[in-house]
Image (cartoon, rainbow over all chains, first blue to last red):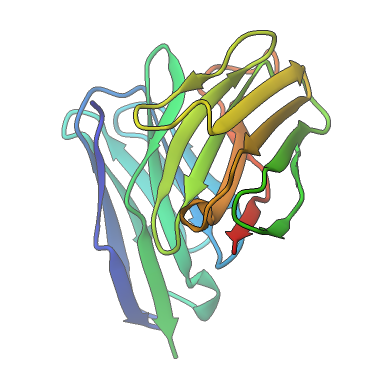
Length: 111
Length: 119
């Protein structure tokens, strides 16, 4: 059974600071996604990572994937209030379209 | 980009009644759709895989007789919560895995969600 864990579960950080969210998964995967969810809303796709060493960046967010370590990171640079949300990673298994979601990281950026 | 809609956005019903939630792919065909449930401050849990023209596949622990899924066309899947109870109150989100012809590793497209409250 595929298990996906995120760390930390809750994060409060000041504007302008940097931080990293970690996503560990338990079995071999061929794709990993990062999503953002605002309160009461559905999911917004941020990144799709498909290969070992993949790195993608969009604005203040950068995601990377290490398939050997079964680890993905979402790095936040110089955080701003607008980034406050819950972030989920989700992992898929080759040959299966189902996704298993991580526990989520609730991020609060404080002035 | 691809759009997935859900209807209704929110619904409040009495205990014991049934509620139907629709999930539509607006500009693409989806032979497969997924139904998730999300309780407050928790992650998304996959409930079932909806397959066009065949029976849905339910995840372990999900009662198929309580959560009826119908995928009657390539653009519509419905989830009916039968004899709803307060513990069924949740945020229900559907998704379609990819556009037809797109790589299997393409992102999933999520609907806006339906918030169900059972009194």
